[in-house]
Amino acid sequence: MDSIYVSRLPLLSLVGVYLNEKENPQPLYLDLEIKISLKQAAESDDLGDTLDYSTLCHNLQTAAAADHCNLIERRLNDLLEIVFWDPRVYEVTGRLYKPGAVPGAEISVERTLRRSA
Image (cartoon, rainbow, N blue to C red; front, side):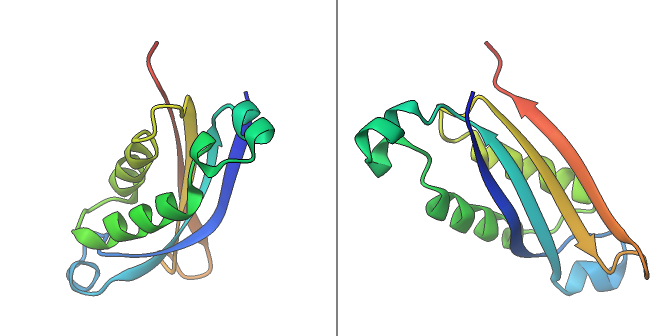
């Protein structure tokens, strides 16, 4: 299986359990590894034969800004579900970073979702 990578996609999101986190959007960063066949696109050179990562990134940024959630684990899961809107995606691994959550540390969570057979 082939992969498309998205690295450090900037997001603004209302995420966290504290009052200031519920009122002030925070910067998050998203890494993705998307498992999808690139064979047809490599042969055709046609955007319709692959994942449109520009549209995907826009959809992810819009979703991250849409509403509040308490945990970055939940936010990551919701974002990974958006990647599965494209039925050609077999698997996606995402890592979501929350800079500033703990002074002096970089906090991130990682999750993998696979399409059921």
